[in-house]
Length: 429
Image (tube, rainbow, N blue to C red; front, side, top):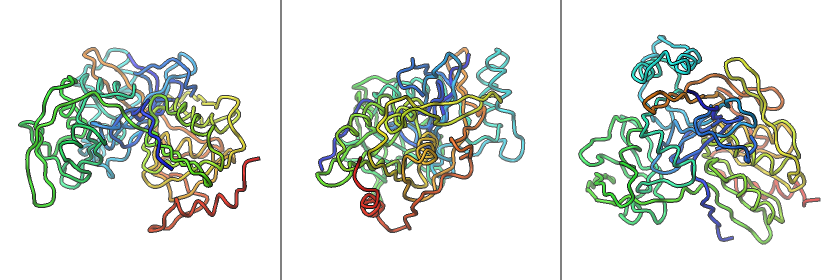
């Protein structure tokens, strides 16, 4: 059975913390550590739909992330998400990398028809040669789904694979058990309990960090920082994912940083824009995607209806549209970089093509494929590439990325550069 595709003082909202881009019901994500969501944010959510991929925000994958969003109709939707393995190294090289490629669309159809079992599906995904297709055990996928709802059981770590298959802590959630235990961004994770994690896929590491999703259960972590190595025991807790941070300014633009498109992000951005008196700086740097419905909901904050993106599933063309009634006058600048992926690229490109935003920074990652999750009898899930999405002007993103309107050279602060751009945009009318 397959689901829809997944294509001043800071205020931190905590309603969602997963990454997901959903067309219809679809997920789009790239790399992250938490969760995912996304066209009409009010549509009923099908958490097994197609997606464009992203990853969970905490105790989740740093790359390969994915997200889901409900479709406006009953049809499955794609997902847009996750960062490239070459950047975050969440998976080992698939068997198909040497040319033995497998048709992922055919695999998805055969799973849906009950012709392929879990073990065969896992082998086919590894042989597909598709860096964006993934296979999750039931336990791993349950953790991902939990993150999509804005909460998860874990210790508060985002992790990624680096050179040699080592596992590095990408982020420590403030106030989490890991933070209280003194762990820091950049520390290396050597062991989880008796298991050595070097060489493991990020999904396996995340699953071990979450354990059986029991708050209060303990786990012993082996950690290395520079030349120092030690072990620490931490207790898992139920934590909120945090995907939106708003920094208001008395005389400058309101900065809205969105780390991932998790459940409720569209509403959070809409609330923040209502209070923006001097323009909005939408910071999507490092955003690897999430729920497509939430990405479309954010587009709806700034558009009065109209096309956001088109996408195909097994060759069938579909479209995503913004809701009517958005704020079309507040000055809007979007910050992007090479870590802006999937659903974040879809949102950026839509607002750029529609002439609604000026884009600053550096070229985005270029993740424009659509994955559809297929559930097997034992609860495991294969997420397989079934198509690609295009922006309103018809251009594709996959392998190309989006070029900013204003390039910010390496070493320069795009936040500081944006003030000059806002001065040229003028006040809201």
